[in-house]
Image (cartoon, rainbow, N blue to C red):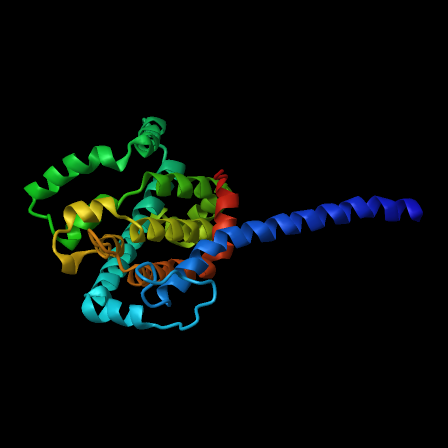
Length: 279
């Protein structure tokens, strides 16, 4: 009995140390977001007032000024619409391509898939000029469609969903085939219900990538009323003076939708990453 108690003490000490490390790490990760909120409710923060951890006179004036003096509501709707369309189209294109790479045998399938994966190594900065020239040829500069077209396909999404489709037993496909189901019915009735965690994971990644995208919207969208949140936030910083309370208010507004989406899909994201083998 005494030996058992002695043996459990190191185990408890290890758990306590682990909890302390996790709590400290969570506090470090959460502090920048907390400081952003504090700065946004501190009038004049960054100009004549240094933000305090507990503001003496908190105010929502920065949020009111943000939406009253600037077309920020339109900017939020722009980002929300572009991110939503991008996510839905990427889900469709990635899921159908993943099914083809996993279930449809065709000559050169491995080579084509390897080429898709190789495109993940090409940075966006390399593609900016060719994409801009191509879209200018079709007259799509400064349009929503011009901002959307390059995001409709995702090599990462195809890779993620292909790994998930590979985890679905092929016996289910064979059973559906015996019942007279074709590829479309197998795809919608068998494959998609079994890869919902991976779909949720891709939803979060695609929405987050589009929501936070800065370089491409900055290049292709010229009119201020078409700008997305990252571009509009960059425009809030003046050349000589920056009203940091307003900038931080915009940052809080930009973070909230992503935070809500991740909280809603957190369970499925963890399952999707685990089942797909993504490291």
